[in-house]
Image (cartoon, rainbow, N blue to C red; front, side, top):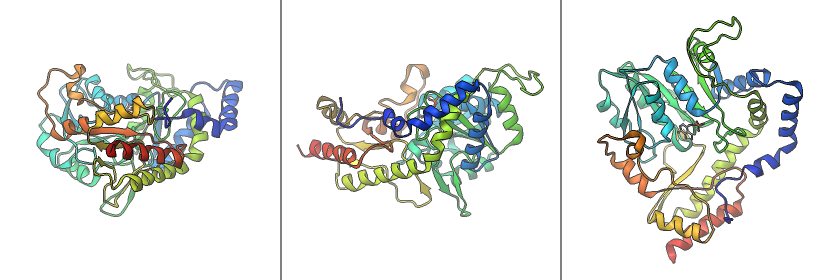
Amino acid sequence: MYKVRFVNPQKQFADHKEEYMGAVEQVFSQGNLIMRQDLKDFEESIAKFVGVKHAIGVNSGTSAIYLSLKAAGIGPGDEVITVAHTFIASISCVYLVGATPVLVDVGEDFNINPDLIEAAITPKTKAIEVVHLNGRICDMDRVQDIAKKHNLIIIEDAAQAMGATYTTRDGSVKKAGSFGLTGCFSLYPFKALGAFGNSGIITTDDDAIAKKLMLLRYNGEDRETRFFSYHSHNMLMDNVQAALLNVKMKYFPKWIERRREIANLYYEGLKDVPQVKLPHFDDNRYYDIYTNYAVRAERRDELKKYFDDNELVETIISWPIPMYKQTAMLPNDYFLLETEKICTEIISLPMYPELTNEDAQNVIDAIKTFYTK
Ligand SMILES: Cc1ncc(COP(=O)(O)O)c(C=O)c1O
């Protein structure tokens, strides 16, 4: 058992057990299982939270991206620009709708490098799928300028960024999921806002896309008219997950603050350790939510082995090889320098609101001890 665990869902459950169990009891005792009021309430509260007109609950972040690409009419013959330094779903969904992903490198904040986007545009490019990694929004002023100039759709893979904000050059403070045609969120248990199982949600300001997504997530069926307009999947969010997430929404703003507090503790404790590069970037346009606290560490593999052998700190390496070297993507001739470097240096430290200051200090001490021994 590690001294500091990577995640601790039991603790979050225990903190509000009565409320969660009350929500479940209500749903089950009233038989409110599929597409009921709890789901509508959750969709409304997410739309309000993100600052868009519509939110559509689905069963995962992967489904959110897949359905968004489908609803945007992206398919065979189209190219979608995205990054390699992301979870495979960002890329797989492009393949799954029959389009071709075109991968560009990321910058030092792990997000798409806007300087590289235009060179990747071809006559086949339909969309830019930005990935707001680790809870930090991409440089959306730059991305939006490029999209506008080349008439491209923006899809936001905001799987890791619920609640993150970015101040645009006109001074508006906008949340992840409010920039693109759609914003795609994962509500996987270990995301900043996580369900008790798989779930996801799509945000949009576009009425027609919202309507299409409502049909696509449920076999193409309009639940009011009972007519089927498309062949599609069943990718609906369960009502019981929505009921549980409605409880979590009450605490979510506080949890984001706590994540930022922990990030600051890590920063203060580790800023003078030259072997570790921390994910703090000097730019006050960004309000990062630290879904993951991913640092770049010298002798990363040895550091992880030291943590593991001594059961000190449980960590995760996302990802040890670039996605274009994964079997699912072969063959190709990609070589993205920053992505390659990140894969050899990256390591994610424990980060969740229930982490205590003492836990954070234990992580800091373990890292310092490793580099001084
Ligand atoms: C960047 C990114 N995109 C997409 C996904 C897919 O979300 P889900 O696991 O809910 O399908 C994830 C989840 O890990 C993610 O981190």
